[in-house]
Image (cartoon, rainbow, N blue to C red; front, side):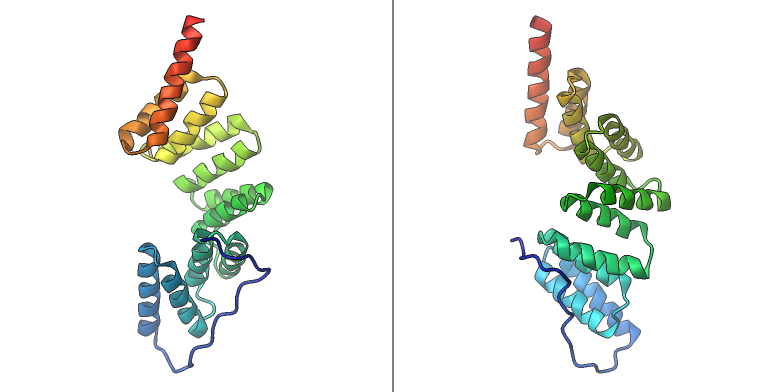
Length: 213
């Protein structure tokens, strides 16, 4: 469910400030992260906030709290928490996720800049190349978008989101044969992905129509 947007992050609730050692803080983080990975977002949010009440400069918790908001559809809150994390620690993962959130907010220039920062820190960051491709595709810079998707696939040939978007880009551009190749690779990787099968069928239909005309 999408949360209502607000102009600034909600204040971290105040817990009783009894002394907590590093081991206990580590357990707070591990529990919150485990809940996050399991999709229990409210529990994860509460866990990150609990840790931040004791250690407000814990960058990973700030970043992951931002990702909780992103997953809940509150991209404005996500942006502000991730920016807090970046103010404390320059990390390629943070910039990669910042770029994704900015893309969701329609701030394409800022998204491109954030993803550029991520790729400077880690040139083989597959998701950052893919997200950059999405930004460029939204900007109608199709040759650059194609190059970004292909770079993601070069690094990780099994990364089906890049293959899927490459196929769609090629199909829209009229390069039906290469689009079909991309969709066929997706269907081999993900037999359960109905959209890939539909797009593959569309590509073959288009190719057949072109040959018969």
